[in-house]
Image 1 (tube, rainbow, N blue to C red):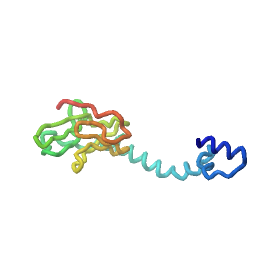
Image 2: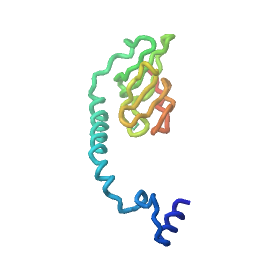
Image 3: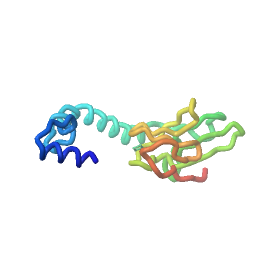
Image 4: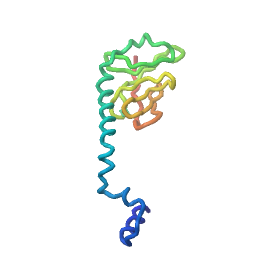
Length: 139
Ligand code: FES
């Protein structure tokens, strides 16, 4: 419908309020957005590399209701201890683009600092852009 309205306006020479929005030659907004886009990409790179260098606590030290990314022989795991004391482990690699998730104690959820995906304590997706759950792991 939008294409029909725009094409009609172009053919008849009418002014169309949205024509600039759909103009394929609109470059100015991309140039204007470049600094914030680059800043965001730098933050993603910092998390992607820096979070892998951060020290990790042992899973045994987690109190009930807490979670943390721990280092194991099989890689980094996102481990959560429920109120009954049972440990739940999932892969710490976000299924969107591979950043390491962080634990949000207030929400009891795993959150990705790169693009904002959120997962429950068993790895199920709460909010995208990730569409696949964090892989279950044994601990
Ligand atoms: S890498 Fe996790 S949301 Fe993009």
